[in-house]
Length: 163
Ligand SMILES: [Zn+2]
Image 1 (cartoon, helix red, strand yellow):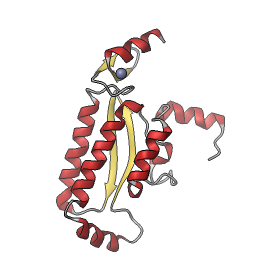
Image 2: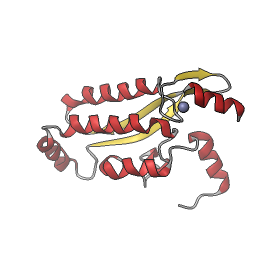
Image 3: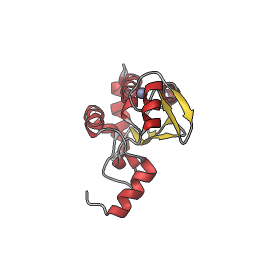
Image 4: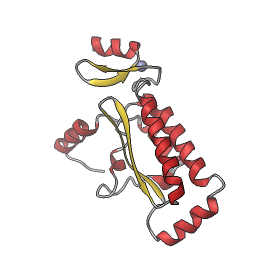
């Protein structure tokens, strides 16, 4: 993708550096159906995961749990729904980012109504976990409100201070 310096600066300002591309790719490979990375008018996932590497484990677990809810014993149902949907995805992430020191996950989909609350609960759990997980390294952390609002462990918070 070709972007001008001006717009890449803007994107960085809006979304930060984002997660390491190798980690991102692991998630995109495993759950490729759930991410549209080519269509910025529809999904902001083309800009990647807009948070640091420490939350990779939270995202991975969230996806596994959602997969269990959507597919676990319900695979046939999902396929029936997909068949009716034409080109739409039955489930997809629209944006995954850090905001005010915690994870924010936006999704949409046309999966069965009785599963909606289950999926919301899983996402809420992931967002809650980010409140106590260092965004840089994944160790236990807390939300700091110094020069910026960010959830960090003591070690990463100290490094940030020096830098
Ligand atoms: Zn840390």
